[in-house]
Image (cartoon, rainbow, N blue to C red; front, top):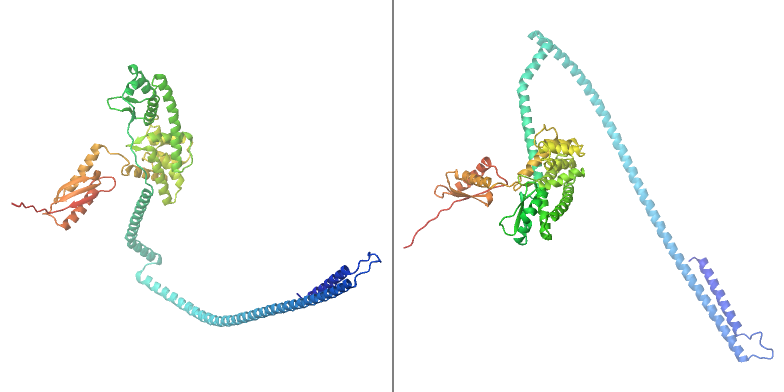
Length: 533
């Protein structure tokens, strides 16, 4: 608050005091409308006058107090403003002094740089002079050397009797003969190194793809069993004079085997789609209980429609699992049919999805189009869904079906037709499909062995171990995944047991083909027996 504001506030307070005093005096003085014959009481008038004087005095004191307070506040405000101004002034002066110091430093630095530049310019001038002198000296020496070389060349030509062109040709021919073997060795070494790197890289890509994708392996068979609540149901399935079972077999295209096996009926067919349709239809008939030719026709037709829908769902799910663009609906339907097709007991749809993922993984390692690689792998066995309906092998049939139903990619068509080397392979995606197909088919458990082949593999495994003279007996256990070898303790030592174990493992690797790994364990022990009498 400045002094002017404080004086104004004091004036307002004084006016307020005077006004309040006047109001009080007016209130205490006799009213003008009082009748003239009314005489005021002198005591009351005196008391009023005294009260008015006191109020005036009190108002004056209040006004003075207000003025003093206002003056004190004005002084405090002026003192605070002065201090703020002083601080701002000091800050501005300090900033100005700091700027002056920075400017002085910059001027000193600029002056120092200028001196350094001047010194460097002088040094460069000196170097230029030295380089110019050295250049002149080198030019003189070069001219002198050229003259000497020319003189020596003339003397050499006079001594040898050869012209310059003849000498150059003879020298080049000699160098070519000397370097031919060295160049051939370098080329051969370079080729071998490239082959080793390519083989190592190929093994690495295949190994990474196998490790990154692990698929379940399942095996399908050609028969399905249907549980029945009681053996009486077998008679109802056969029907009077066999009419029910004949109608069912005619509509579904399967063989229904009703024998003495309790609680089951067997449905047999090589076409897995028909077999699954028949199994579902027979299950519905058994649950419904009404088994007669008209009802069989109705249920079979209904089940076939449901099966068609289920096949489309399986195809769509395979497309989603492989993460490829949705192909033609007919191709999706054919993919769904692969779910009911087996190849060496391996489910073809699961195999196709696995090949698609392996192709995508290897294509990613090589920097190729992963989506295109997965599409090639997914559709490579599409011909197996209709190879019995068309002439030719499944690669040719699959390529024809894919082309018929809108597949325009040359890479996909070539991969389908050439993944079994039926055509000349000139596409990298075909190579990836062929490699992925082999990997998927050779996984342990992917393809089921026959009993004879399984027994022969175990016998061969034991025979390899028994071929060593130190071995007494050998037993293949854990389904051929482990070989227990019993060595002769009298003819071997502990160190020999370690050597024999390694030699047997190497012999198995070289002589046998087997899935997965085989653990070889050599057992050597000495037993002492004595009878106490």
